[in-house]
Length: 171
Image 1: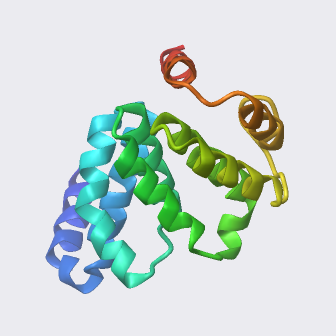
Image 2 (image 1 turned 45 degrees about the horizontal axis):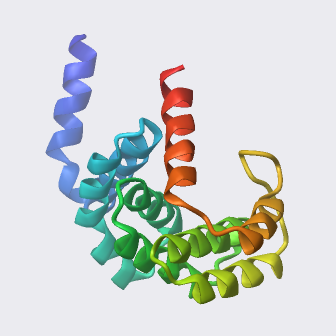
């Protein structure tokens, strides 16, 4: 216990040497933890405190934006979610490529929820042009995209998805 206190005292005393990276890392961890624990309002609050700085720096932040955009969608703030997911479509990061179909699917889902069916169809078609890497639901994000081309994504499906997330977290 004494060693821990000494280490903490030393670290806090030298914190300025690690700034701003350590503060940014702590904020990112808070966003990821809140999202993983289905605490979507907290995720949004934590993300908003960090998003503008990251967007301006061009830092590797796409995972946080994806989580924040999804959280906004879950709480019904579809326009803000759309803005965040759209910002991801403008990037060509190698790390982001495996998620292109999922991002296109979410973009189409948000457009459907906002009543923008033509934009949703365009997003779904663009998603189908990407390589399908995975989908946590059924293994094929492309299959879900094809379904949404035929039948628009609805708030009931969003509610069902959120219920599954919460059940998985609590279960």
